[in-house]
Amino acid sequence: MTEETTSHEMPVAPTEPALEAARDTKVKVAMIGLCGCWGCTLSFLDMDERLLPLLTKISIHRSSLTDIKRITERCAIGFIEGGVANEDNIETLRHFRDNCDILISVGACAVWGGVPAMRNVFELKDCLSEAYINSPTAVPGAKPVIPSHPDIPRLTTKVYPCHEVVHMDYFIPGCPPDADTIFAVLDDLIQGRPVTLPRSLNHYD
Picture 1 (cartoon, rainbow, N blue to C red):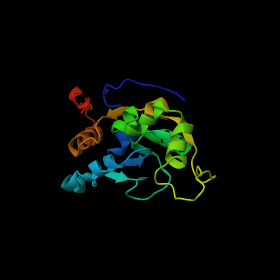
Picture 2 (picture 1 turned 120 degrees about the vertical axis):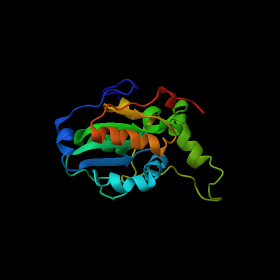
Picture 3 (picture 1 turned 90 degrees about the vertical axis):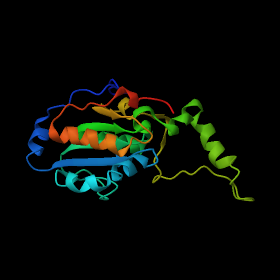
Picture 4 (picture 1 turned 135 degrees about the horizontal axis):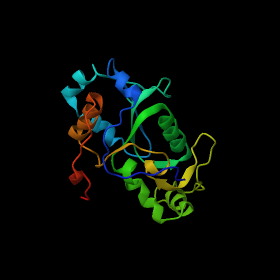
């Protein structure tokens, strides 16, 4: 599974030519949620009134906000929320890595695996059996069945943090990170400043 791993420390902001050039117009940003709760997307929206001037500097491409399904033009920054729990997540994450200059893990699920990774201590077949065969919500008299269809993405045997699938450039911890933190990282990148986040953000509540 692992293609490339990296440290969880915040590095100095990259100086990719595409990002430098983008600052002369609008910086293209993409974002997606994999296996998570979308709480990090809500934190993005919690920037509230700061979103209006921010939108004069960035252009949001593929995201749950625009409903654009694929990245069709190169993006300078990609935000990834959620961990990797199925084959569709893997394909989506690699698509973002191929089409974004800077890729950022946002929130505990993307950074560590989060709550979905709690199933990693069990066999996948046992998780599916508990959810569908032995479930207390099973319909009485109906034969329990584990869903299987070509349109349903196949689950991976474990839930992986994003950096165990592709290289990630930055990590924003939190469950979810607050709006101030997301804004600070985005503003630093847009302005070409080094991204500096306090280590105190890495903690267990």
